Length: 156
Image (cartoon, rainbow, N blue to C red; front, side, top):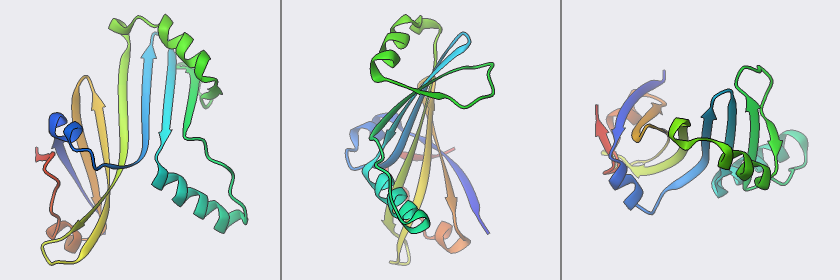
């Protein structure tokens, strides 16, 4: 049984806290019918994914730390990789006052629970229009009941 809980995020506390174990950050810039996507792969995500690929395919491709993608919003095809210079050029052509920016951060959070056991959860943090929210999937009620939240999480 999975328990999903939504929390608010105190953005000032989150940004001031420097000990984040970020796996993946996705930033989308949507302007008119164009979308730019910037992916930043965290070290722990790359290691886990490479290990998984080694296990599945007996080899591990090199994972770039960053990827830049572009697509038309009306097109159902996947976004296509572009160079960083093309990304920057396109982003500079966007009218930022009319550009919607969405960010999603996948973070690993390790903690010692109320029962003194070690736990690990993934927190998905979304940021849109300056408002941050977090969603946590707990594997069971024991993990949820023993959860000790970081200071930057607030109950909704």
